[in-house]
Each structure stands twice: as structure tokens, then as C-alpha cells.
Amino acid sequence: MSIQARVLQLIRQQHEISQAELRFQTGLSASAISGAVRRVQSLGLIHEVGSLQEALGRPRTLLSLNADYAYTVGIQLDVQQSHIVLSNLRGKVVHKAQLSHAGLIPAQIAEDVAHFISEVSGHRIVGIGLAVSGIIDAERGVCLDSATTVGWQNVPIGPVVAERTGIATSVENDANALALAEMLFGEARHDRSFIVVTLGKGIGAGIIIDRKLYRGRTGVAGEIGHLSVSSAASYRCSCGKTDCLEATASSRAIACALSERLGVPVPPEHLRETLQNEPDVAQDILGHAGTRLGAVLAVLATVFDPDALYVAPEQSLHLPAFQQAVTTAFQSGVLPLCRAGTNLRFLAESEDMWARGAASVAIERFFGTAVQA
Image (cartoon, rainbow, N blue to C red; front, top):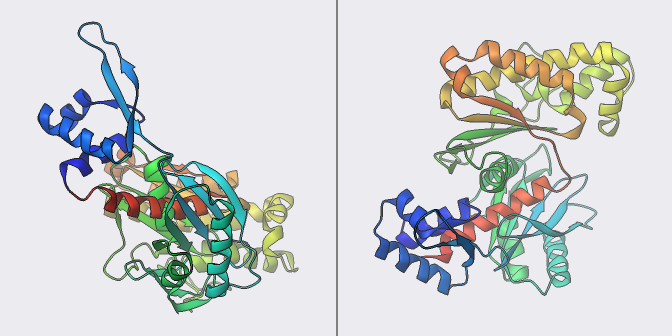
């Protein structure tokens, strides 16, 4: 990484920082830091935002990212409802909408994205990010398999959108995208290594090691939903198994178990309401699912030894009974040495968090190429 890139990275991580602090954190000379700052400042990526007066000496000029230098577009693709946002370089959503497509047809998605961009034409857009549940070839921008969410196989959605819009387009697994957003702008800003576990119709994990996203050799890293965790369940996962985590703890599996216990179908849109209206049944089902998930989280904490584990459940499962079951199983399953160092936290779902995560993927790509020398 070049000196300019290191300096820009540190400025991005801090709200405000002086050149003296940059020298302290990098160990570089004053001339090297000032030269790098001038270079990045000449590109318009940072600016001076005031000064810090200490007890002795001259005031120190504070530097900050010019968050409105450019913007990125983030899209969350989902069968039921897809969101699209415009974000500045600090991840602040300044405009949002829903995609109008009736079906997940790549060419139509590209048209919808182009239409959204025309609506925000006054902003300089430097990248587009798409978040899709499933296995993604991020290098080529291809969705290899998304049976759970959009039903795609080998769909080159990235190139399709890039060709229509003329803007560099990145595609990422939705859990990975959310992990990037949390690292850059959210709860994990100060963590070196952490894991975000997403829980909905499917279950996945975004793994950050030493502040770098870990995808594995083929993009399969983080597919924890297909780990075998129990005896066969009634719900069959999209992978074909009935004993994996998704067959036990996903919202679809929980809805299936609830339907069996109550003797009536429970539509996904009524899952939270039904769980709240049937506390005794819900306690049993959520306890079973939460125990299985907590055990897997304990394994992740033991294997990766991260600073923190974050669980991002969809709104229907953001319930105290479920969180308690997950937490209890995690604490009893993790090694005592890990228990002291790995924090377990739950993230509250917001309407645009997934699209914001997609925008974060485009932001990372932009900064990866913004300062080359």
C-alpha cells in the first residue's frame, strides 16, 4: 500500500485527525506525511476542517474526509422488495427508493438502476454496488448461485448493470456487504477482526480478518447456514439437507415449525405477529433455533477468535426470547478464553441497511483505485 493510500485510509477511519497524529500512527517522517497529505488533498478527497489548540505550541490543523466528493449507488436485490440508495463516501444515505421491477430480470434491474441515477443526476457517482444473497464471484460480478433469495445461477448482473449505466459495478454477497458497512461506518468501526451473521430466509456470515474481507478461494466462505447442526427437521433447506442450520434456525424453518405446532399455515409476513401471539409455542421453537445458532457462533468464536460477533436478524426474529437462547448457547459453548474477549451483539435491522451495505462495497472499490501512486 502506498503512503498516500495509508494516509487516506487513516483519515477515513477517523472523523478528524492531525498530521502529527498521522505521523504517530504510521511512524513516517513529517515530510513523508505532508507530501502524502498534499497529494490526497489535491485530488479533493480530504479537506481541512478546523484546528486543535493544545496547551503549548501552535494549533494543529485537522483533516477529514471530503465525504461529498462523490457518491455511490447501492442496491439490495430481493424477491419481495429491493431497495436502492445513494450514499456519500461516509455511508450516509442521501436518497433512497424501491426498485420497480415485477421480477428479478437482469436487464430490467439495469434499467431501474439507470432510471434512479437519472433522478439523482446532480451527484457525481463513482460506483455501483449490488448485494445478493448467495455465492458470488466478486471478481467477475457474477451471481453463481442464489437459490434462497432470487433464484439465479451464473447471472452476470454486474456487467449487465455496468454496460447499461457506464459506471463501475461491484457485486457482493449480502452478508459480506453488511460486514463491510459495519467495519467502515457502523458498530465494528474499531474492531480488527469480527464476523457478522445474517439471519433471515437464509443464514450467512461476513468475515473480516485484520480489517479485510475474507471470501475464501471460491466465494463460499461464510456459508454457515449449511453446517449440519441437528437431527433431521421438517423443513428442507435449499441445499437439500434437513439437518443444517438453515433447516433449523432460518425464518423459513421457524415458520414451518410454528405452522406444524399450530396446525395452520404461517405466512412469512405474519411470522413476528404469530410468535408474539403464541408465547409458549414461540418460547419452545425460538429456544431450539437459538440454541443451534448460538452453538455455531461459539464454534466461529473459537475458530476465528474475533473481537466481536454481530448477529443481524430480520425484523420477525428480533425478539428477546430468541436473543436470550442464542446468547446462552454461545456463552456455554465458547472456550473460556474466548468468552472473555469475543463480544456478542445484535444489530437492529433498518429498511436500507442492506442497500447501504451494497453502497459500501462500491465505496471500498473506489478508494482502492483512487490513490494509486
